[in-house]
Length: 166
Image (cartoon, rainbow, N blue to C red; front, side, top):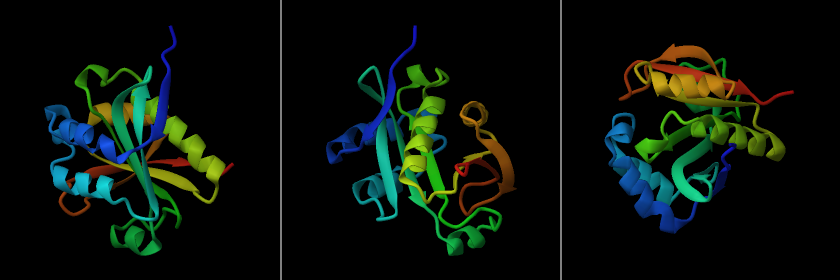
């Protein structure tokens, strides 16, 4: 039986749910500074966007993206990533839905949306080397491990990328 997974526009009223998800142990491990994530969700930058991930019409996760400048990419040693690429963060808020294939579908939906909008050559996801569940989800969505680096405050990480260029 195929389950309906969608991404819908984030609304300010969703902030309470996001706060609850960020407090969950399986999320907190990878998002250790919830206040900065809540601040971002309250006031996303002009070059960013976000959505809720829904399963059968019920919110189960959160996905956000920012178009990254050349200066930021170079500052973290990612000179091979093209200007205008999207940096994406994703979380599944309810532990019952982790490792259920929801994240890869949500990432594919976002990739389709960004492709339709045009101008975004690549999507990148940074995750801890220890977050093997995320690695599997990213690879299921077609992403490839392309770099290792250590962004400030996050420890050793992998960069997973997906080209949107045809």
